[in-house]
Length: 63
Image 1 (cartoon, rainbow, N blue to C red):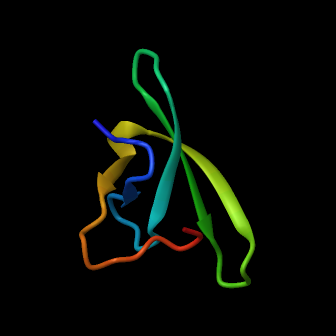
Image 2 (cartoon, one colour; image 1 turned 45 degrees about the vertical axis):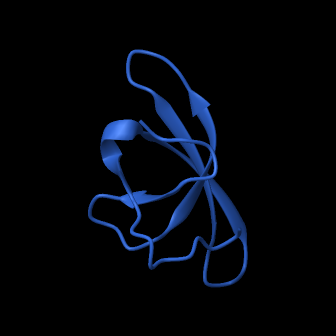
């Protein structure tokens, strides 16, 4: 469902993240990267059901 480099966010979240890896399995794991308010680069893993595609108006932080 998701592609490398695509901008995503949690269904109820506001943080825009960039997809940096996909780990296939029973439910695909999506590895994301973003920068926090202090400028730290963070990496997280989410199941694809937790994420939605971010709209085109948002720009991924950390790109």
